[in-house]
Amino acid sequence: MKLNTNYANIGKNYLFAEIARRVEAYKAKNPGAKIVRLGIGDVSGPLAPAVIEAMHKAVDDEATKERFHGYGPEQGYAFLREKIAASDYVSRGIDMSADEIFVSDGAKSDCANFQELLSPEAKIAVADPVYPVYVDSNVMAGRGGAETGGRHDGIVYLECNRANGFTPGPDQAKGCDAVYLCFPNNPTGAVATRERLQEWVDWANATGALLLFDAAYESFVRTPGVPKSIYECEGARGCAVEFRSFSKTAGFTGTRCGFTVVPEGIAARAPDGTELSLRKMWSRRQTTMFNGASYISQRGAEAVYSPEGAAQCKAATDFYLENARLIKEALVSRGLPVCGGDDSPYLWVETGASGWDMFDRLLEEAQVVVTPGEGFGRAGAGFIRISSFNSRENTLEAIDRLGRTL
Ligand SMILES: *Cc1c(COP(=O)(O)O)cnc(C)c1O
Image 1 (tube, rainbow, N blue to C red):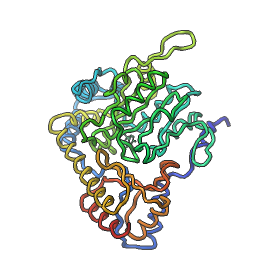
Image 2: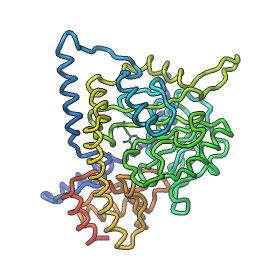
Image 3: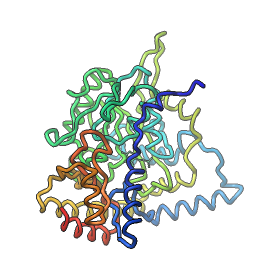
């Protein structure tokens, strides 16, 4: 059978399955233990009232003959694409039109699918540590090659460490054709300065490389001057695609809606000289392989931009950021080096111990679940990721217990 044997190259140990296994084993031995989970990358809800109201209305639309919606446009409804272009970009001084916005069922699928538009020979770079989707989707497509020591031979890894503030520069990406960047970052919580992002844009424009910018956490940025979008950099419309999601911004992890921005003007030449527009290629790809996000989700996403919806969603991200601030304060006061937690729901904590050793210790001694840094790549060794997606009560309880253990 001629299967895609690139799948044999994908890393075997799935991080969150291993975490669940260890937590279950602990619970079996310690029934009744109250475990606090600071490991999850999922919001704790509920959805904003404005979103719920809009979705209820959309359900009622579906119940009528006049306002029923069947298949919608694969690229998303105009009501949402226009709202996104106007509110997220034009109102912030960025040139953007609705037909450069492609609505989807979330950023994970777009981040995974976008590599289909690259040549099979394209050399890709990712950060280490990294959100695994960028790596695994390229490995499945044959760009990864065999894995040795937790890294794929065919992929370039951009080392993130304390020395570079967990924001690598293009000096590490020589010869690469496409680079995945994510800021505010998952897992490190790091943000990039405008100067650092501009370096990437200038490099991409000079070399003809493509930047794939994941801005899933943009709505957590509070520090003035920290970019929320790659298009705040001059020239980014010529070299960068941006992935966004309502998942962390508005609690849509279960509702599902996101979008990808592909500006007009990123183009390549086919061997016969015809121009290939990246925007048109993505449009073609989506119309062929995707049938649109649900009407109900898109109406919910539209409500995120209403004055009430925006205020309610901001209150939710403010709440998580306050959790993050409390956790950070406690860890820093114990002398632990901490990255993130200011413009991000994640804290990247250097404990010195192996991530899995620290994971086991925190589970046994504090009944707190964190995510071991190694799960995100080799450069994650010695770190743990702590998430602020939790109730205040659980967060305070976890801080108290961590304080007694660390
Ligand atoms: C959560 C997350 C996403 C969003 O995924 P959805 O499919 O939209 O839920 C994208 N990128 C990163 C880095 C994330 O952590």
